[in-house]
Image (cartoon, rainbow, N blue to C red):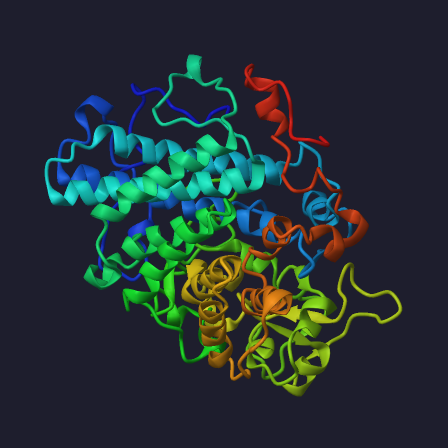
Length: 507
């Protein structure tokens, strides 16, 4: 927990952000003074600035050099290989891909500490903004929903972690690990309270679509309850989202992950990035800077430019990390339009006039013949003067298809198979697939398969496999039972937090 808590007497520079009607500029951090906490949080404008600072961490933890949460959750799955120029290019990412990481892995450390930066900012809002009017009540509700999200990520990835609901002085930062049940109880409490004061998505103006809504909190509550195996409570939460009529499946999956559909009809929660800053090699925010505006992760994970020929594909070369596997390509039916919108083979690229010139005898490291299209490096998703540094494509954290499939699973667990089929088949119908009519174990297998192809490379597959107890059979010997279900508590935390004396099993 080192450095994640800041004494109350320190300046509140993190909360001074300008909200504009510009498409994404509202998440740009603009410190403009030093204010004591005692003199801040007095007005609606203070509360507004403070909550946007809590959102701002979502950008940072998902685009922090090469150490994003998305990478940490995606690489251990069967969907991707690590890539890069060699095993020594980014060894921290190779370790995640091979599941041979230790508590000293920097990606794991930054994922852990990043969530606590977000929690700190949420705590500052919750504990200092007075609920004297409806606006500030909404701000507090947003902070509770965001705090619940950050803790839900921590408990999923690390299990027992410190549960801190106040700002701690540096001398008090050493805190014991809370039991998983206690963390989930707090998440449920935060979300339940947030739901009461959050507006519907449709009540937000266009410039505020980045904010969490009642539907966001309900969907997150349903997900958390699903992970807790509270099936009835989970399906109730998802049903509230579904019957709200606030969301629907996009009619065109092929553009769902493009800038044109950001905060669209299917979006419940997404991280906003912008390319309008126009970074060049001298101005880009390297080095873990928390004032991150664009998503450098997408450039990192584009096909390696040394070998990539775009043709008429619209895709441009990147730095060659996170290539899709043959397993994910083969998971799709040949006529499923989601495959071409998610992953291309070399043949698919050649059909678009492009090519891959890598040596077949000594192929580029970890490349197995496929390119990631979802969140791909397309020329129209970035801006100049240096396209590599200005990708503005958002990252979707919760979308409606995921809600429907989680609802399907929750209904299945209650033997409500008709309801399970209804929600499952909504997703399949959007993709032009025939309805599933299976029951029993075959129905569960169909839900598992649909989540695989619908949500590929969205950072959900690995922990789906873990909670289903399928990780060992799917991932093989690299997944060690009673170890890889969780990431290790980072070495820095073990060293600096005197109240944490034991790591997770196997580390």
